[in-house]
Amino acid sequence: MNIAERLDEVRCRITEAASRSGRPADAVQLVAVSKTVPASVVAEAYAAGQRDFGENRLQELLGKKTLMPTDCRWHLIGPLQRNKVRKALTAGLRLIHAVERMEIATAISRIAAEISSEPVQVLLEVNIDGEASKHGFSASELKGMWEELVQLPMLDIQGLMCIPSPVEKAEFARPAFAALRTLAEDLRQRGPLSLPVLSMGMSSDFEVAIEEGATHVRVGSLIFGARSYPQTN
Ligand SMILES: *Cc1c(COP(=O)(O)O)cnc(C)c1O
Image (cartoon, rainbow, N blue to C red; front, top):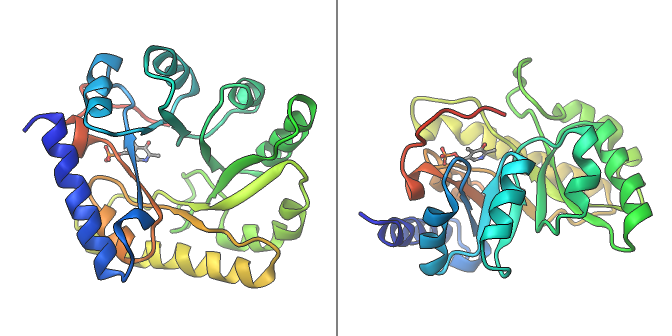
C-alpha cells in the first residue's frame, strides 16, 4: 500500500470508530505523525489531502515546516523544553499538545504576553496511568493546580492529552482513555473552560481512543510505515 492508500484506510477506520461513538467523522481530527519521515515522503500525504502533521521535536518540525506548503497545520506533540518556548511561540504552530508541567505553562503565558496579543492554544499532558517515569501532570496534581492554570492569561487550555503505557492489546488502553475523558469532565465542572479537545490514540489504539471520546488522534507508523530509527521524547 502506498501512503495515499494507508491514509484512506486510517480515515475509514476513524469514520467507523466515530460513528460507534455517535459522532460524525469530522468530530475527530487526524494528526499524521511525521517524525523521522523525510519531507519528500510527508509530501505524499499532503498530496493525498492531509494537512495536519505532528512532530515531537521542535527542531525537526521547524525544518520540515519550511519545506512543506504553507497551508499545513503543525502540531508539536512532544514535550516543550523551557529554553525552546520562545522559538515554539514564534513558529506558527497549530497546537502544542504536551504542556507537561507548571513551569512550562507559566513560561508560555509570560513569553506569549511579550510577543503576541493572542493566547496560545495548548493541551495539558496527563500522566494518566501514573507511571513515575513518564511526562505529564498527574490527575490529582492537575486538579490541585487548576485554578492557578486557568488564571494564566495567555494560556488557552483547549483540553488534555495522554500517552498511556504500551499494552498488548488496544482494548487494554481503554481504561486510560476513559480516565482522561472523565478527568476532562471533572475539570469542566470546575469551570471556566469548555475543554473541547482530547488528544489520545496512536497507530495501535486510535479506534479505542475515539470510542472513548478522542477528538484528535496522533497516528504515525500506520501511515508512514515503521520508523527506521527509534525516537524517544
Ligand atoms: C510517535 C508518536 C505518536 C505516533 O505513534 P505511532 O505509534 O507511530 O502512531 C503519537 N504521539 C506521540 C506523542 C508520539 O511521540
